Amino acid sequence: MNWIFDILYYAGLFLILLGSVFLFLGALGIYRMPDLYNRLQAGTKASTLGAMSTILGVGLVHPQWFVKLFIIVLFIAFSNPLSSHALARASHRSGVKPFLKEGGEDAYAEEVAAEKARETEKSTL
Amino acid sequence: MNTSRKPSVSRYLYTFLIIWLLWYGFTTSLQPAEWITGAVVAALISFVTVRYFECCDPILFAPKHIVWFVAYFFVFLLALVKANFDVARRVLSPQLPINPGVVKFKTRLKNRFARMVLANSITLTPGTLTVDVVDDTYYIHWIDVKTTEPDAVYREVAWPFERILLKIYGE
Image 1 (cartoon, each protein chain N blue to C red):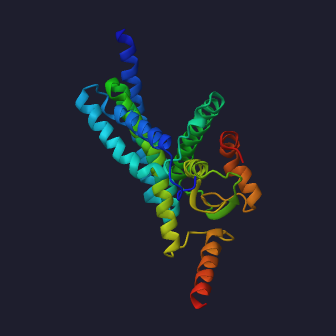
Image 2: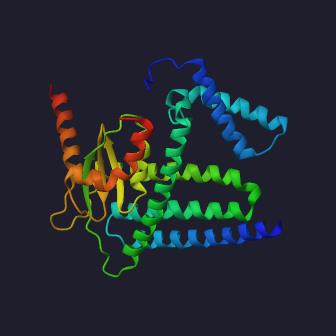
Image 3: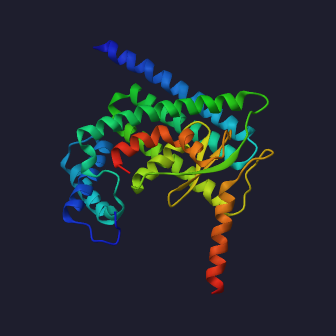
């Protein structure tokens, strides 16, 4: 029976290593990207998979914690993208312009402008 | 779900049960003190959150839906791993190959929870980030814009996930 736990142990260590590598790449992405939105892109994806894989790895090394850690992983999978969406939305609405190359499109700016126009129309009535 | 309507008793019980199960998952202990505390906490939380608790309708646990959930899980996991290698490639290459922009598309999903799942999945897939959802229009920050045509964006970004979500939640 012991060899199963050995396999789980080494698989867990491998997942922790993989998670740390992704977390490092995410940090590097936050450093290298030109603006907030691209930084969020790099940060969200890398930190989600990095944290999930690290926590699952700990769950494999200590199988008695696995259920708890699995619930935490689910929670991260739901909450991480939500928080990055909240950050992106709030920044765009408070006027942080996305970095665009020549001919780049910002469709959300039109929506925000249209919404503002509707609101001023309402307040003048 | 209409949040102004009064939730039924079975709805309360169902919410209570799911939260109690979560409590068991966290404590993994069968001592009476633990499950009594769990019941009290679950009762309080279910009383407050029952109006917003629309994720786990019992109808979704029908066998054919479970098959689609498992399929969704694997599609999602594959996309997440791909997204990370995509980030790694962009971050590690010296000239930083990005062409960012914000694009939009319209979804066919009606269910609010399904829309939330779609938005989260898009955020975690290669090169895309959901900035906002206004009614049925998604605004997506795309790190490498290939097209700004909403239908083409829909096929490129949303279709792999929406295909399965439409099977589970209907149009």
